[in-house]
Length: 212
Image (cartoon, rainbow, N blue to C red; front, top):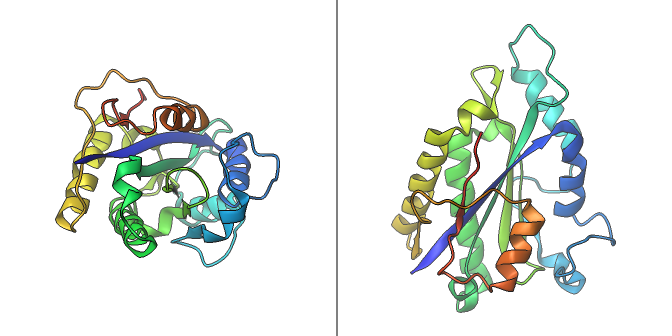
């Protein structure tokens, strides 16, 4: 059985453009050298039918729901990215349709957990060594922008339990990462580069947590 890889990263408003450029392949100068441009046409966004302006969409989500009296701080976390994938063996014998079904199911569960109205994008990259999804969401709940409460230790534990269970119940043989992991949060590029070097070796911890 393979591990479900679920890597979480927080973004301030100034970081959002960079994620848009990476997800939508808007630059030829990406520092990720594992992108195969000849396969980029196979990428897709499960939430949007076309490329979008991430900054504009994030602002729309916040402005439509925010009930606070104070202006939002410039250093506030306005978007959270969740990278979903598994090891290379998991995808090796699965055709494109089954791989897409895996990401569609993960998207549906994450949509249920964090609210469709808060989703920015759910981009699946098929042009790198291992297929993966970048699910991006504004951490809004009950009129508040708060990654600290939505993605606190209990929230992360719930995600760690519920997502692999949902995928298992729908026919995918994946399990959650190691409990009580001592792994440190890494920048998404650092994480992916390390995983690629290890070819997603299932012996290493694949559930990356971070302290809030």
